[in-house]
Length: 192
Ligand SMILES: [Cu+2]
Ligand SMILES: [Zn+2]
Image (cartoon, rainbow, N blue to C red; front, side, top):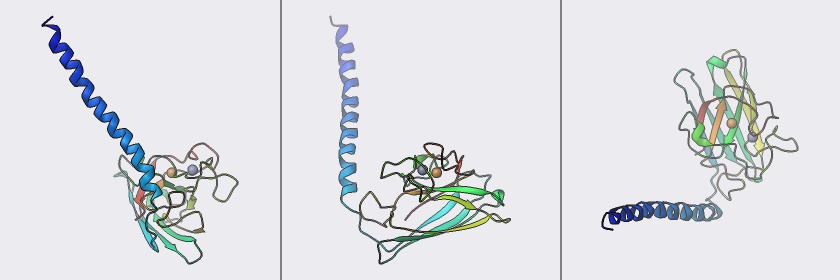
């Protein structure tokens, strides 16, 4: 009987941390929607500074976002990727503002309206489906986009602050689910 006691105590003490962990996860789940629902203060300007996620592929650029008086946000994007000169690369807003693990910590496409992945402006597309950017023979490309699907702050269905802007090594086919088969994430910047 005495020999059983330590085993029982061990089981008991093993259970405690997992209980605590579950409690922590539960309270996080409860907190997140509450935090999101409390609308983030609106700002007029935000930027994402793009950097490469792999040491062997230089990616640079910025995306500037400006809110206008009509409830639209205008994005001016410039990227330079010498290794992709003459090619077209996919750019998306991904749901988490974290560029870690070669951009994978940003998780999937930001999709607050629960749509299928697709071409911007088509019947079905994610609010983060910016699309392909053509690069010139020096690897430079620009894209301007104005939309009422985004806000800088505000409610979670439109707020693009603290999301990641991801540049892929390949082209978005605008069809494959869930992300257009656009290849590795070679560039990333958080929208701040
Ligand atoms: Cu992407
Ligand atoms: Zn998408």
